[in-house]
Image (cartoon, rainbow, N blue to C red; front, side, top):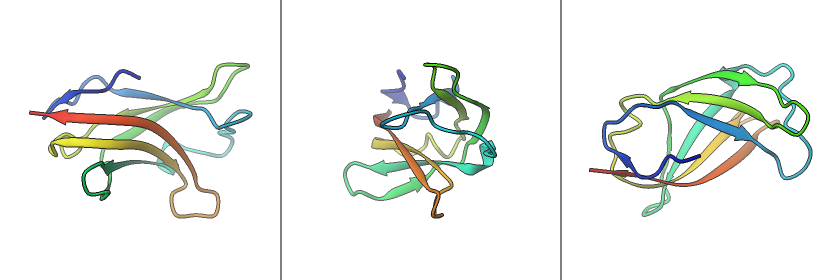
Length: 109
């Protein structure tokens, strides 16, 4: 995905996440961008922070190409220095919740 390290305050370019479950394809039927949450877990203290940016452009999987969604960072997303475990959560807090992990992102000065 190519998002680390990131300079504090940088908000561009938007991030595109591939939504690939452990097996099969991720079914986007009936979902909208508002069903997704970016969760950043601070590596130092394990505190979770929800992103305040905007999801858009939910594209369903086609053949072997996984579904994708785009995230536009907010100014709040890029103010905290540190290393974060990045996750995209679909339908957070519901029985249908599904989490996609994207590794470590570092926001530097």
